[in-house]
Image (cartoon, rainbow over all chains, first blue to last red; front, top):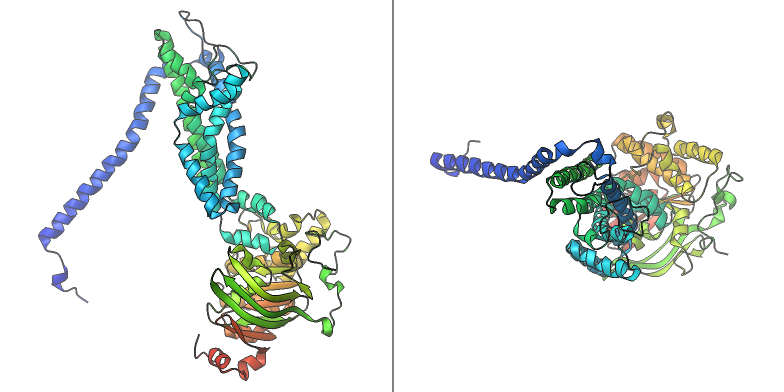
Length: 287
Length: 282
């Protein structure tokens, strides 16, 4: 009942262990701090530099010509939302169906190569996506267009959505599929009505994460959506987007435009932050 | 001639609600066995799980399947509605007739087979996104039944058969997974009964339940035998003795003995059976 003393480390050793333990814990705490510090630095600078230029005009006005004070980024904000809408209509159906194939239908061999391809695509530099879509949609139609921008962002979403969809579908217990099959329900109905519904929150989360990821992309839009200082009335023509507008203003020589670029960056950041907050909300409700 | 190859569902619309569709056949004593199985073997890849099983499972009776873990009893059960095919790489040999029809004929659609041969699993598995009501009716709804009054009738009927109606009738809209473990298992039974299968396969339905919930389900099995053929796999020999008419003892993938339950438990003809039922091994 009482531990033989030989099994106990010496007092000196015990004290060394305690100090070591404290030291390592502190080190890990500092690392954790290093993870979140940049987020706050980014927010801090964006707010310090950009908040003063955020006014009603910023959200409602078109950009003014150089030298003229005022103006806003209304067209870029709307443009970004339009581009995201188009990206989602390309990326979500294909990504989700691909994920369903991976989780429910694919053979082990096919899945291995599909996952490999998706993971490689996830790592393709975003400017390459821009060039591919430039070659596929811009050159043949002889014009930059909102469509091309939407497709470029949508293509980037596909592998992301596909892998997250697969992951959440695999988490749905096999017993639900068996229960459905034992009721004489056709397999596709089990997958659409029971499995996907059970995993829906996870899928929505994956879609929102993919949207947040592509919302801030600039490079794929340079060759596709191009940017526009006016309202876009035809998706077959160039369209403004927040990242493009920020880029154009940030490299300009005008102080006024620099301030607007900060404000644009703040808005973009808040948009993505908003996406992530919604993701939190969805993933918290899960069981 | 075959009922198994017909289109997936003939939604039993309101026209024929009262008597279960499967009772169109007279329940005569000479109805023949529900399953007439000869020399049936099954492999998972290279591993043989069933070896030349020959058995006639009687209709409208409760047949218990006992045997030590890994003896092939669950595999046998899953072969009765082709659920084992979910495992890739399975292979079968021998014949398995279901009311005279070859269950494994090339033209037979496993979806139709499973509508006629329902199954209840070891672990209760109500669909988590669905209410109690939706859980019971999902099999009918997804097979195209829309008639409100008919669905309502079937809901109550199924829950009553599963002895759950009184407990849940006032909160049918609550999630199925809000129920207790025993209630969830009875909900799963109600769900399986709602599509009115001819056979109900039960794979250790009580192994996760306390004695009270077990007693309820055993009582339920007694009532089901009037209308359904029940095949139940159990580890609990008292349960097999209590609620079955016939008992099959499996060992190492082979059917060792199949006889009236009373005889299997009192005067088995095979020494292995005797050793198992008397608790000397297994």
